[in-house]
Length: 405
Ligand code: NI
Image (cartoon, rainbow, N blue to C red; front, side):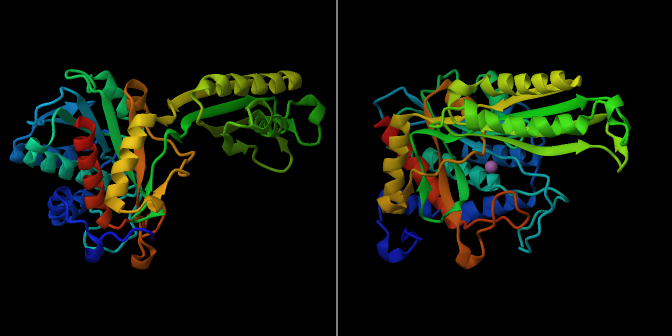
C-alpha cells in the first residue's frame, strides 16, 4: 500500500479533511445499515426511503421516484462566483448473491447482497450531501447528487437521463466513483479517455435438421455449424479490429444435442462484446450477423440472432479527469497512488451520463488483504475497507470546491 492514509502522523489537518474525518463513524453506520438491507435493481425501496429520510432530516431539497426508485438532491452553495452545476452520481442497487461473510452487518435479505460496494457509494454520496449542506459557504454553484437505481441491470442511468435529471438546472459536468478491490486502499484509478468498455450481448439459435448420428448426409448438423461460428467469431477481433484498439468477443454459452447417436436439430449460443472506442458502435453487431449468416447459408442452416447494445463505453473528459486526479492526490497524499493504467473491459451505465455531459468516473482503491478485505467484486465474500468511505467524500468535496473556484 502506497498511501499513508489514515496514519495520524501524516495527516494534513486541513479544513476539509478534519470535517470529513469526523463523519467516518456515520459513514460506516449508514453503509452497514444499507448493507443489511440490499435490494435489486428498481426495487431499492428501503434504500430510497433511507436516503430520502436522511436528506429530509438535514433539510436538503430532493426529488424521489425518478426512474422508479432514483433520487436527486440539490445543494446550492452560498459563495458568490458562478452559476455552474456539478453532478455527483452514486448507484445503489445490490446483486442476486447469497452473502457468505459472517459479519454483524451481514445481509438480512436472503439471496441478495451488496457484493459490488454500491452500499458504500450510497454512503459516500450521503456523506458528501451532508458535508456540502453544512458548508454551503465554502462553494459557489450548485451540486446535484444523483442516487441511481439498477446499475447491475437492466440499467437506471438511461431512464434517469430521460427523466431529465441533467436538466433544470442544467448540469455542466458530472463525477462518480467505484470502490475498487482491484486496487489497494490508498490508490486511485483515474484516467482521461476510456475507463470502462461498451457492453453488448447476443443470443443466437441455429436451426439445422436433426437425424441419425450414422446418417449425417440426410441432416444439417447444428453442432458443426455452431462450432464453425464460434471459431469464426474469434477472427473479428483478430482480423477486423484495428490492433491499436482493444476489444473482446466472448461466447459464454453453447448448447446443443442430447446423446451419442443423434444429430442435433438446433443449437444455441450466448455471448458478449466489449470495446473502448465508441467508433465501433454498430460494427460488431454487423460483423457478427454477417459471420453467422454466411456460415449458416453455406450449410443450409437458418438462424435467429438477438443483439443488444447494453451500455456505451465509459469515456472520461480530459479536463474533468485532471480535476479528479489533482484532488485525489491531495487526499491520498502521493502521486504514486494514482493509477492511470486502470482500464477494465467491465461496463458501467455511468456512460449514459458521460455521453450527455463531460465528466470523470474513477476507481477508489478499497482492498486491504491484511484485514482479509480483498475478495473480488460480485464474490459472496466481497467486502471492502471502510476507511475508503471518508476518502471518497473528501475527494468529492474537494472536487466540488475546485470545480466552482
Ligand atoms: Ni458495481
